[in-house]
Structure formats: structure tokens, C-alpha cells
Length: 299
Image 1 (tube, rainbow, N blue to C red):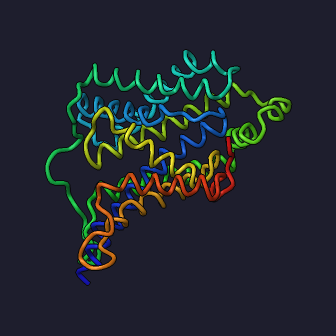
Image 2: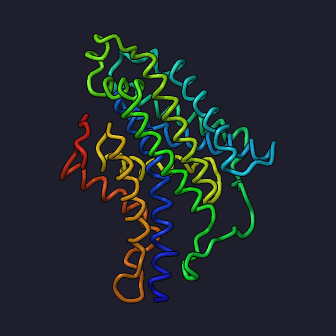
Image 3: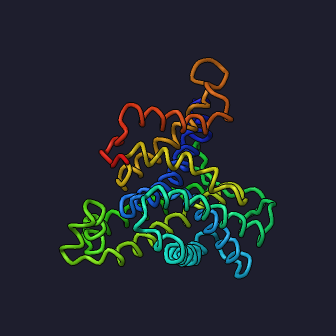
């Protein structure tokens, strides 16, 4: 029984939390790929910017991290729209490789700006021991983990409803399937691109805030998360938001459970190899099924 409690509290729950964060980041990454047709390597640094926007709001107004989410989402969406207008839109007629390489430059610019404004040291939303909640008198889960998982589920359900039942969501899916055909039917691709940036930036901001809340904030944290997010997007299928949700949870659980002592008393893999687990899954998917589990695009 004690071993089961350790498994749930120290491995399963953190895996679900990490998977929820990965899923939110991967959804934005795969939405942008589906509509804009290029891999946005600055997405991790956009997440970092969202985390620092929330840090500023918390410092100025004394807000709870959850209450700082709307401010971070609005500011990050505005940042994404500015990046698209000044940097990506002039290059839209160029090959997608040009946009992909440009995204590396955007990532460096965002990271350098954060370091210039906030410094290179780590920051925290909340210091000290965090409250936890007991379930059935045995399971103990930190309150922030409950907030992270519940908010992630709400946002994923909201995205599903938006993509399935609204005109905007149907137009986004149409542009993702065939931009030329969508344009011929009267859909404004420019408006859809802007909406995609807003949604992707908002989800990235939430993922960044949750990542910082679960640990600490520093300028490289989004860049470090780019590999597992990319692995989640590839696992689910590029351009498939639902695949990104599943892929994020799979990657998060795989990373945490890989360090559980499945055989004997030693960890199966050292926790330092968690990133290697995501990389291995990504390479395996690219070899075995490059279009992902849900049949995404190969480019």
C-alpha cells in the first residue's frame, strides 16, 4: 500500500501535471503548424513571456496565479499578433523554411528581452511550502496540481467546443485542411491567422504560468520545454489539436514513470534522462509513423 501511495503521489500525479502543461503548449504549436504551415520554434519562448507577464501582474496587484492568467493571456496574444505583423507576415510568400529559421531569431529576441528586463536569476510566484489536499485519508495532492489539471481540462474542453460548434472553429479547420479552397469559399484567411495566433498565444501563456507555478521562472524554461512539446505534437500528429492533447499526456507520463523503480529498488532511468525519453519517443514516431497517431501532416 505504501508503495502504491508513493507511485501515485510522486510519479503518476506529477506525470499528469507535466502532461497537461505539455498538452497546452503542444496544442498551440500544432494549431500554428496546421494554419501557417511552418514550425514555430519561438513557441517555447512565447510561453516564457506569458509566465513573466503573470509574474508582473502578481507583483503589481498581488494576484493569485490563476487570477493572473487572463492578464498573461491578453498580453501574450498581443505579443503574438505583433510578431506576426512585423516579422512573419512579410515573409508569408517565402518558403516555409524561411519562416522556420526566422522563428529561431524571434526566440532569441524574446529571450534576450526577458533577460534584459527581468535579469537571469530565477523567480517564484509563491514561496514556501504549498498547501495540499488529502483524498480518502491516503492520497495527498498539492493544491496547485489540482488547479493546473482542472484548468487544463477546462481549456481543452473549451477548445473542443470552439473547433466543433463555432463558425470560427469550422473556418480554422477549413483553412488548416485547404487554405486555397477556404479562400474560394469566402473565408478570410488573414482573420483566421490572427485568431490562430490569439488562441495559440493564450494557451502558451497558460502553459508558461503553470510551468512557473509548479517550479520556478527563468528565461530559458520555455526553450527547454520545446523538445517535449514538439514530441507531443509529433506523437499526436502535426496539425491535429486532439492529437496534441493525447501526445502531451503520453509524454508527461512517460517522462515521470520512466524514473519509477519498476524492477527492484533502483529507478528504471535516472531523472536526468527525462528529456531523453521525450526525444526517443519523437524519433521513434518520426521513423515508425511520421504522420502521428491521429494522421497529421508530414512536411
